[in-house]
Length: 255
Image (tube, rainbow, N blue to C red; front, side, top):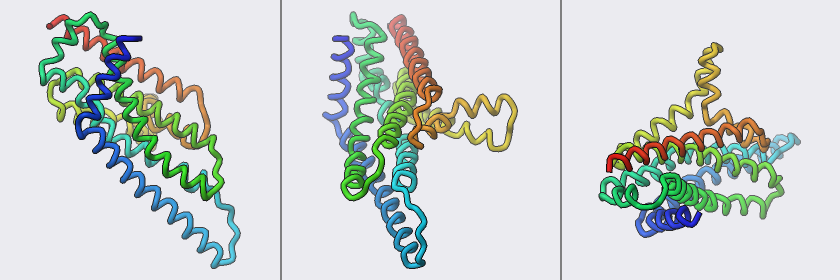
């Protein structure tokens, strides 16, 4: 674990010694802040309209604000995750330091885990910025915190599997732009697989729908912890890290 920690701290530091982390954190916070503002304003306007009409329809902060915002966070992450992973190994190849890694006494799995955990840590930092908005909501409202906690767990698991895929793709090229574009393409495909089930009920359509990352996030967004969804994300994470370690092994043999 000591070697994993060394790679983790080195990779995480490399994010923050460049403008990458600060740019991602700022843009993520601004975009989510806009969604948060729109959600709050819509909720308040809806309540005022009910009062003006003399209606007393029940209003639920979790259902009308938190759940849509968690879904929005999931969509925002789809665009930011490729920017987090595209440099992990592509930059090492471009700068020529990949040879140092492949000829070092570090095991492939230690290198892969260290880099992937650094990417996850940066994403967690981005999520922490969004928690400031929800803290405002809890200060002035009274939502249930448990569905929000489960929703954040779902966001972390979903990001973990997409980051694992992006880490693998980053080992395949020395060009960061190509790595980022390919990661976005694969993640987008995993995102839209669910659409197939809307017009086809055959076996292959059900399989594609099951492979969609959005299908397995729905329960988390509702505040429901489903074991099958957690297992799906864990499986994709392990598969992505396995492919990355095999790719690293291939790079080691070619060095």
